[in-house]
Length: 265
Image (cartoon, rainbow, N blue to C red):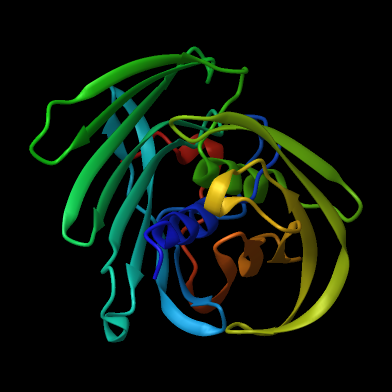
């Protein structure tokens, strides 16, 4: 399995979906602490691993109240090639409907590294620290378009704002090295068999600007339930490294908090 497969899992399931940022006055009716989603990831038609996304309990990060949104990507042990166990955490500030930054813990083929991004000035500046195991950290500062977020945070911003048929959305996304604008278009509704039963879903086309092995051959397609939770139940992507399909297999709803509650412990 190619070493960039881990990037496809984490990037895809952590949030290759996006939108304009929701206003702070809106109630968060889509998700809350305790929500957990488990996905089966298929690579070239074979089960290659899983991705689990959990909205954690309120905590303090950089002196501010956040919900840690934790994405875990694991390769299937049966494959026996290039073991992957990655963890990505975005620190979601529910009241402002944005992320304060992220931590990315990479563990692949028994080699480890870490990347921390701290977003400042409402997403206009990013301070990045990268460190390979056993090496000194490397720091850099990047100037970004206003409102920039990581992909995981952008996905939850879309869910929180809401999805409407025929609408188009854009959001500046920063990966830690590259900044670009992601675009989404809601093409329509259809019925789809899911782990939640047969559901009506929105079909959403996504345009990205990834390069090299993660460059897409066609637009990514994501399916979200049309209810207020807008749960992503299936994602289809055709990268240069091969086709990937992620399907929801288990889902647990979290507590739906109103904005007046987000500062509570």
